[in-house]
Image (cartoon, rainbow, N blue to C red; front, side, top):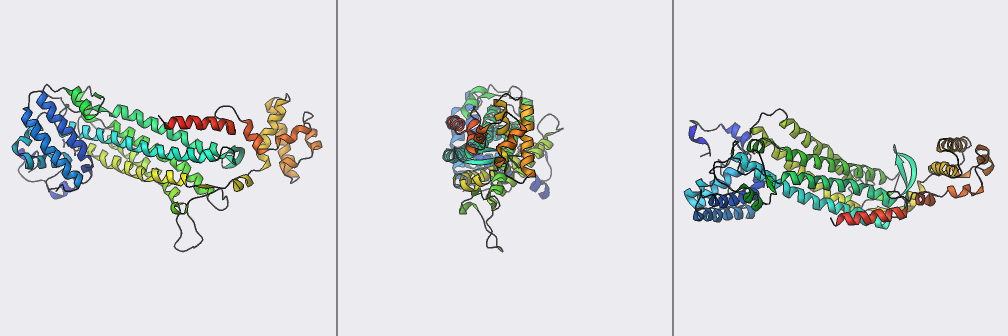
Length: 456
Ligand code: ARG
């Protein structure tokens, strides 16, 4: 028997049931559903709707249902449309008719919104822990490479020398903002819809605040219709998830390139690389390609859910059931990617010699301009002089740092013998020592900030 069959004269068609039933995926909310029901039973006793005995019987029965889910012995029946139906059906088998009192004043509409908010709150906590592990791995590597130099790029073209720690930590801060966004989303998610009923609220003297606190919410919804109609908390969650995916795709792309033998800047640990079934020499960064690739699907879940919500009329609509698979899949995919990303970073071998070999003297052209600025030339003119020096070196096919002094002096009389100090990669990096810069000293301060963030 379904929960709602009273007014119907024929059973639901099997094909519709296959489409309508959500137990196969929403069983993941069993724990939240049962906790919600336990707290609700006690609150209804508080409101004088159930007796203490009845509430305790319900809680006892629900404890057993929870154990069955935990131990994997919960036996699903054909009429278990969704997790809410299944739990109530099983509760009835255990405690008898009193189970029928549990749903008094409650609807699956406020129930599902409650369960799912609790589930998303847990999911945020879980992802935060996994994001922290990626950040910790970045910090750990960065600590080893505050002095190691590499070519920083813009447009994938050699730009200026930077320290490897600086590059690594450039991945740390986006993840820090992601954690902050998740924390912020969690704050808005932690609002209890329970007591909203199907749409209009409850006629019982429920202490909704108390009930919310008992479940771990920080407050209650102010409008029962809004509480059952909206799923903005799932959209926020998936948008955070998608953005984490996008951030990790940058790490993925960098490491795919850097591990290519043509660059040879890094080697991924064997256990995070894969081979080819045909070409014995191949060593593929599949871990990072999948990290990069997953982002596309994560964006898709967010777009799909936004599209589902757009234009829905006020009130609960079954379209809203679509939120589960998107959120579960987004959570699962990101939960797979994050530990791999953390481990790849932690076990990465960085090759300072190869990174050094990729530094080209032209990357110091900006430093030549800065040298002239120090001698009083306005930056625009200094930029032009340094540009002419680049051209001269290219025309003569000599390295930028091998231009004879006399030729440089012909470009600007401000250039003296001490221009030699410009052609030093380490000095170039070290000069960018203001907070947030790539200089080893600045990066050590940055590392301290990062380590502090990890303790928050
Ligand atoms: N399985 C449903 C969902 O996920 C629960 C709510 C059903 N409510 C209803 N009025 N049919 O949305």
